[in-house]
Length: 374
Ligand SMILES: Nc1ncnc2c1ncn2[C@@H]1O[C@H](COP(=O)(O)OP(=O)(O)OP(=O)(O)O)[C@@H](O)[C@H]1O
Ligand SMILES: [Mg+2]
Image 1 (cartoon, rainbow, N blue to C red):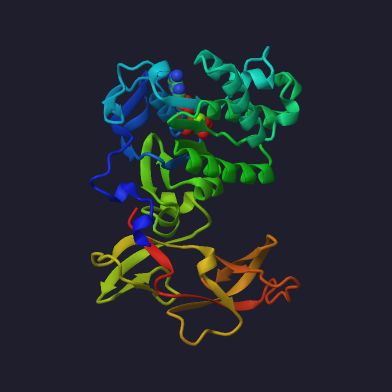
Image 2 (cartoon, helix red, strand yellow):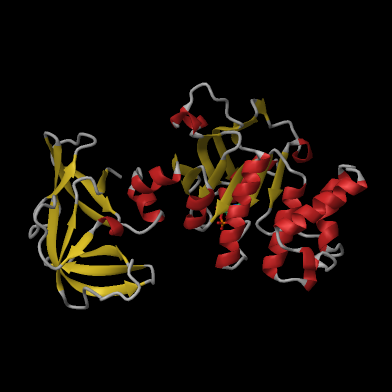
């Protein structure tokens, strides 16, 4: 039922848990965060994604209270956080460089915050055991941090930050040191924890698949600004810029000029090619320069020209990347442009339909791509 969909950001009456209001953070004359405004809601799993140095950790550190904004304000549950010291914010942060206490065992590291909060001994024991189970560290409980692997240390840091069941948990690259399989399992565990505890998570990750998997919304950042914040499917299917389209997933980007003709858009992009036909979602001016962005999996590849495709162009197979579950074909068109098309390998023994140098047709519907002004 539509009513069950979790989307407080669409509800004008919903009160955000976190509000960044025109926050700027300067280090000397370098601007790390640039007039950033964003709302994050209770029980969200909010992912910050962006290239190295774009300001992700700085945002987290300001939320946790380890840095103060140069301008603007940060509100938590409606309260201005400026005068509130880190240890009095209902926020817990797992750092990118998870500083564990070297002289304490794994068990003691996880128990540390609970002890400091004077939680009763038996409750601490129960909680720590629970966290050890969750992060699969039972076997290592008695070891010191230097006696376990990097991935295991990261899980200790995760267990420690989850132990206090904070209202808001900031995770800076929490799974970076884990192998792919453990990483995926931990992602699902994080989502379970998040659902069962109702904690609000803000997670930083370099891994776009991870962001897409866990997040209720993804914010894509560039040089101290949020370029787009939206649900994973909106970020993927309706990016607002070539930057976002290119940052998330694989995409073909073609530059050209677009014109609106009633219900359709005609996109001129190469002398030797017919105009690309698109369904008009917004109106463009006359011969406006834009980018056409289309995902490889939205392009079909066939030996014959398809009868009724809105768009079809001939080309030659230049390269094939076989990835097990999918294959990506690089197809060169007459004008030299290379377009990527992807097919799902849904049969085990694939009769490889196409090989290098084959003449093929690429085709796509009028709604398969998006036209982007920037
Ligand atoms: N204390 C500081 N003094 C000066 N510059 C800083 C300081 N802290 C961060 N910066 C700069 O601010 C920018 C943003 O840093 P930040 O750590 O937030 O990046 P990030 O997005 O977390 O990157 P990464 O993905 O590499 O962790 C960087 O260019 C960094 O060099
Ligand atoms: Mg960082």
